[in-house]
Amino acid sequence: MNYELLVAVIGAIWVGSEIVLAALRHSRRGESERHDRLSIILLWIFITASVFLAAVLRGVRAAHMRGGATTFLIGVALIVLGLAIRWTAVVTLWRYFTVDVSIRRDHRVIHHGIYRIIRHPAYLGSLISFIGLGVTFMNWLSLAAIVIGTLIVFSYRIAVEERALVTALGDEYRAYAARTKRLIPGVY
Image (cartoon, rainbow, N blue to C red; front, side, top):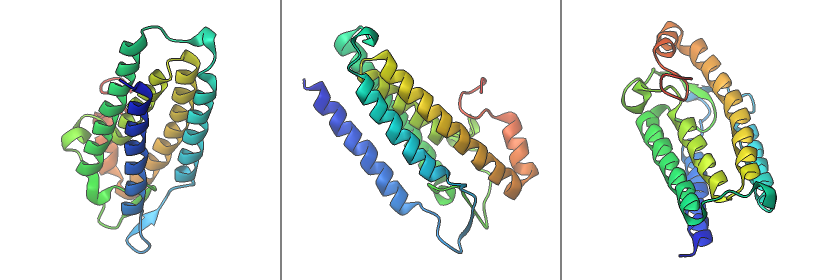
């Protein structure tokens, strides 16, 4: 099996789906109030830089992972799992989901489906996919570059989003936040 081709195909589907999502689910003037604070631009910059750095670091032999095909396929499985979680979250939130942080006039707290368990499952799914990508590079430094970069930018994005939701939805969102965790059920 050509493992590099497998990741290339999955990566193309992943990036293509994000481009389609950006085209379909970008807030429109007049429908919602924007609160993005440049987070969408920072997401693309940090993620691109992290993946590029990870690709460069992939060649550092001292940080090579063991496990061969098994480790690589675990990485692929994590990418697919993360995409499934992300798309489940997007579909569940569909009406209120935008790629930029914005609040619709009729915005409501969604607390069913995957949102019953955690507040930001789309980001969790993306993080799992990026961890998987780091594993497919078969290098600990590559994995660290991707994890650190995505954690930094997703932490900023979550802070921006939560500030906007608290401002718009007040006590309803605060109550929801009090009974759910941001990314990891029961932990964080």
